[in-house]
Length: 119
Image 1 (cartoon, helix red, strand yellow):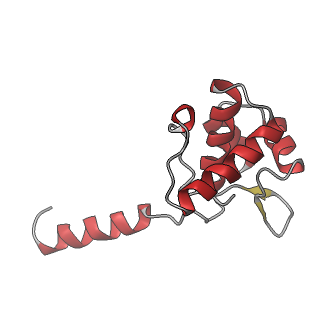
Image 2 (spheres, rainbow, N blue to C red):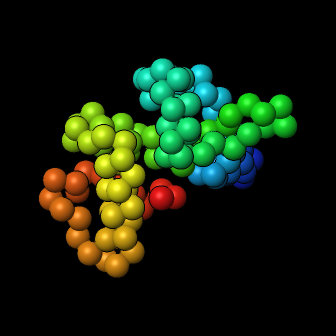
């Protein structure tokens, strides 16, 4: 397909793939599969207040892309930087404050991006 119709189809396709970071779309099983972790781990993070997924009318968890990004940050801090969960909470808040005040993050934590996260 070529011409104006093809352009309109491409435009519509792009619009459909531009999902809001806050739209709750992933079930706990899908989110745990994306993150390669057990669903119970995500429940524990929720219980500790590290992530708060939205709930459906039937009380099922739905994680947004922003939630998944936050969970990836938690995993990076715990797996690659050997930080416990209390430290994760503190470091994410600290990195967000540094970013808000346009200050550089410590060299060891430059691989952690909190720009899109709600901390």
